[in-house]
Amino acid sequence: MIRTAFAALVLAATLMAQLPAPHPFWEFDAVHDIYLFFESPNWFEQLRANFEGTDDPSYLEANLVFNEHSLERVGIRFKGNSSYRTYPGQKKSFKIKTNKFVKGQRIAGIDTFNLHNAFKDPSYVREKVYYELARAAGLKAPRTNYAAVYINGEYWGLYFLAEDVDGQFLENHLGKDENGNLYKGDPRGTLEWRGPDPEPYRREYEKDNNEDADDWSDLIHFIDVLNRTPREQLKERLDGLLDIDSAVSLLAVDNLTANLDSYIGSGHNYYVYHRKSDGKFMFIPWDPNEAFGNFNMGLNINDLQRLPIQWLPRPQGQPGQPPPPNAIMPRPLAQRLWEVPEYRTAYLNKVKSLLEGAAETERLLGRMHALHDFIRPHVEREARSMFTVAQFERAMTENQRTGGPPQPGQPPIPAFDIPGLEPFVRARAASVLQQLTTMLP
Image (cartoon, rainbow, N blue to C red; front, side, top):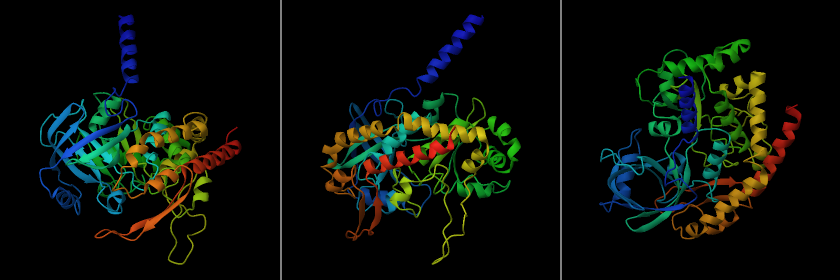
């Protein structure tokens, strides 16, 4: 009996280690051809009308072909915030639900995925590489690959093919019994205490749940413990409530990659999931297209390269006035964890282990260059990208300033300072390593 029980435990651990199961979208590096066919010639205008001005966009029917899969009546809508509003032209991001109009219709078990338009990233590598670093750090992160998208027979552009974070994601990455509450830290999920009433949290988070839609008590309890527990009791209470490794890993990857359009900066672009297996909350990263210094929070490229390991954002001052001295914007997940010596050390060691492993400078740059070369033929065919082929070619080695006049019927192209990845990665690693020498024994 004991031997049988032990064998069952070993088998369960082995199966968990194999999660998620391989999928043709993400099994190996690829640029997958995805063909979309809309019946209406006005499909773009219909998608735009469905998306703008609503928090719950409706889907438009289309047919989809991927390899041997030919699916009818899949659901498609636009997605994104700045990647939609300020991306010039027609190359918008898409969310695709294969079972929206045909129940049970999937591609190898997946019914929802995203096509991201590489907003603000002329290199076309940031999102994929960030998620690879996140998984190397131990996070459950969306799988990502590339797709050459064709719409009604016309090449629409190169996209990131990204796994969606939803109930299916939890099942694929954590197991079939994981159907607990999943919260997205949007529009501004800073994890600050707003009192016991759930209404303020409904305004700051999105709940993608498989339980009671009106019951926010688990998230409120977690935020209460995080914010209001005395320092001397904090470790004891958080150890039973929070997957500490997922929290310090999220903070470490975002800081190391200077990904400030995230929890540590703008205060969003993450998920927090309440696990069924042990009752702990765990963090899942999301939307890292502006990693590696591509979202500046008022900092210049040099500042971002030298970002302090325990950086927190400062509030904006009044027009014409500097911000209050030493003021910071509350980010209690970071602030409270850093108050506990064991958690702070775990965080610093996570940064160090990444720099010695997946984020080691030559290894990381080698991966970036390999992907950049791999996708070049598809970028060279782009006609709707916000970047030129010349900007793509310079993206690895040179800082670039973008921006320009509006296209007919479109908003102006926003002005951005985009770091060249090779100089940024080298300078960031050197700065972090120097800081670690004074912060770790």
